[in-house]
Amino acid sequence: MTESILAITGPTSGIGRAAVKELVNDFDRILLLARNMEKAAYLKQELLELNPEANLGIIECDLSVLDSVKQAAENIKNKVNHIDCLVNNAGIVSTTHKKSADGYELMMATNYIGPFFLTHELLPLVMKSEQKQVVVVTSGAYKFAPMKKPFFKPKRFNAISGYGRSKLGILYLAQELHEFYSRKGLRTTAVHPGAVSTNLGKDNVSRKVADAIFALLDPFFVSVEEGSQSVIKAVRQPEKYAGFYSNQGEIAAVKQYGSDFKMRREFIDATLEELDLKAL
Ligand SMILES: NC(=O)c1ccc[n+]([C@@H]2O[C@H](COP(=O)([O-])OP(=O)(O)OC[C@H]3O[C@@H](n4cnc5c(N)ncnc54)[C@H](OP(=O)(O)O)[C@@H]3O)[C@@H](O)[C@H]2O)c1
Image (cartoon, rainbow, N blue to C red):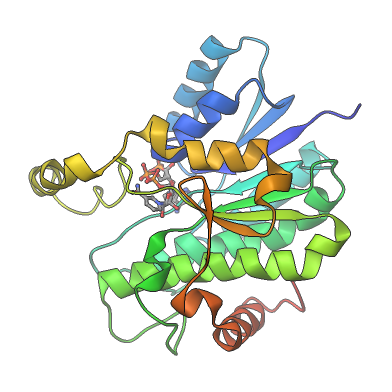
């Protein structure tokens, strides 16, 4: 038996952290892709307390920076020759118009372009594995707004539609993977974890404002342990969720822009062109 390998982005906080803590006994090796090395080292200690035998690798990866994603993928390729399950979980909410190092709107860069590029680079390793699985963490926010040109460097900014578009993009990535690779055995799932009490969106407002907003919303939010269940279920039952959108663990129909094939085609083709790639 070959060793089973999980690679997960955004394991240092929220849903990703809760998921990896529960999945620590499920895989022979886990690659933790993180932008903050201190938090990753701390997480590694926490995971080793849960499973002293765990084989854990930390890979530095800032998803908002294409060079960092490229380097992370190279580091992974030097360490392993397959990945059973890639979980694209990391994401941000930004309430102001920020640009990434590559000039993209920051949510689009972090939540979509970086994960798209990472998936492109790691897909050959996933296809070499036994499990052959990709899980993306999208959001019900995919319904917030249709894609609009210029896709990656918008002139005007709106936090809600900007976040929604980045999550629609990652949903399109999951659909694209399913369409082109399911026949070759790939199992892809897009997960909406529900409204989960995490750090999401709290970085870019003052602590006081964040605490006030989240205290108001708190009754509607579930804990990270509950919120991570949808990701854990998808990882543990690749066959059941393959090709589906999971809304908090329940297979659900994709609505509105999420099922607009023409919009998806145009957006994915524009991404490939922007990244100078021929295909996913
Ligand atoms: N919370 C919700 O209600 C909710 C609802 C629907 C969907 N989601 C989705 O769930 C996913 C996880 O979010 P969360 O709620 O768990 O938020 P979170 O607690 O803020 O965790 C986000 C994770 O992403 C990482 N990250 C952020 N920017 C990054 C970058 N540039 N490069 C690499 N990693 C980066 C963070 O790293 P640091 O630890 O270094 O900050 C952290 O590990 C996101 O994709 C989010 O869109 C969340």
